[in-house]
Length: 372
Image (tube, rainbow, N blue to C red):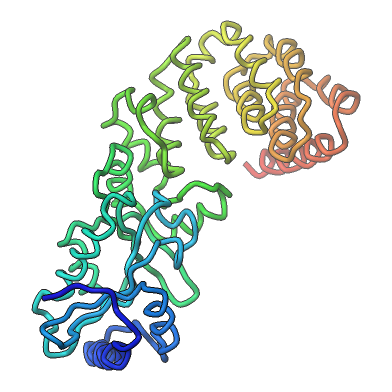
């Protein structure tokens, strides 16, 4: 067997293999490669640009695939690594199907780009169980899901040297669901990879992690950052502050800020010991640092005796952004139900957006309280 770069002279044989592969898929009732996909033009383009790879037995072409950077076909964030290669349109001539040629072709592609990337990432139609099984036998592991206009897909990755974060992501992916991923993508609005794991499942999984996770992990998914937030429940004093700061460096969503604040239970036990740290957060220029400080005040400074300190602290908030304003409105709403003087305080001390959000939150909260 010879593994070589395809040339334009090989196109007629490749088109024949494509037609045979499509016929087998139809015969096996596997609903992929529908319509005229993969088109002559698509295959021509990848061969012309030296992305086509073939296997030859003597002079006979028996298998074909396109080898390319994953970023050529998949958007950033599809996989937990962005420096991956990928292969597409892998197909074998009819009389050679099931005889190990596809596996040999994939292994040759692995060897060709080793040293240039972290590994390979592919997405496979969730109905194509035969292909998924083949890839998993070759060492690919599930890394979540993708939804495209033409169907639902399983994300599979193969890393040459997986680190701790990669191994954790594989375990988390086994807990994920496509419907959860799609819901969380809309809810979290994060640039991180979203696997689709519920918070209760993350809490259960966190019990198997030790605290070195917070120091050693290079977070690659939002679920990994959230796991770090859950682990904060085990920390106090300087180690808690250090842990919060490390997570905030990866934070671009309210879901992390709010979980950090809820998990910082040590602050609730001795709020004033963290006064300077919270003031530091509130004076920051980063939106989610400030929001974290505000939500800590909401969740951990619960006693009315601390309200004077809270009002003193939030005077340091200078950012006027959506998530900061919403957090302030939420905090002030909860305070106003215990101390009505907060109503006048809001009207005299905050911008129009905070006042608007505050009034709406009070209305919503009052309706909810009456309903209960």
